[in-house]
Amino acid sequence: MQEVNETMGEAGRTVGTVAGAGAGADAGGRRRLLRPVVLVGMMGSGKTAVGRALAQKLGVPFLDSDAAIEEAAQASIAEIFARDGEAFFRTREAEVIARLLAGPPAILSTGGGAFMQERVRALIPAQGAVSVWLDAAVETLWNRVRHRDTRPLLRTADPRGTLARIHAERVPVYALADLAVRAEPHFSIDETAREVIAALAGRPGVLAAGE
Image (cartoon, helix red, strand yellow):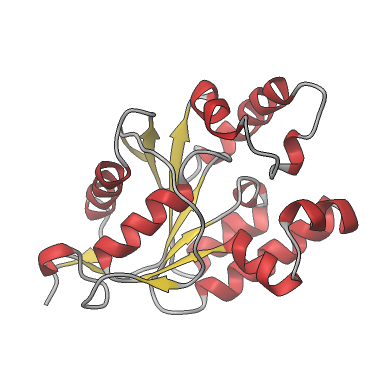
């Protein structure tokens, strides 16, 4: 796994938006995306914010697996967890990710637990995609999610402790991603997206010169 030190901010969620012009080319036509890119990492690591900026720079669709699940189910992730349980959600999540990766090259933001599934980790290379881990410290994550009530896994008596435990459990699996970009709070979303592009450019067969 290659690693790039970088950091980011936050933004909301979008499903299937195409930003920029010149399919697959970044600003100035310098880069063209050849393979799907899957952003993985903890809740609050900035996958949606950085993913949207990355898609804009490369002129490809931005997809969000959680948002796609919510749209299909007409229910929030928290409601699906409460109604059907986590096992049901994870099955639907893997199915949605497979469907989203079947399209043309795009940037796909996934839920924090998606990459923990072996079937999802196997699906990514099988679909010709590249995984990028946005690696953030627990304190950074906590500062971003502490005031939100949309994270079902943090609905516990000690959400900060729960977050730290989940982080410790997941980091060894996230480290299996093809690339890693360090996420810190004082860098802009745009700067982080550029560092992700730099990391992708260092991996053969992912980016090509724009036409």
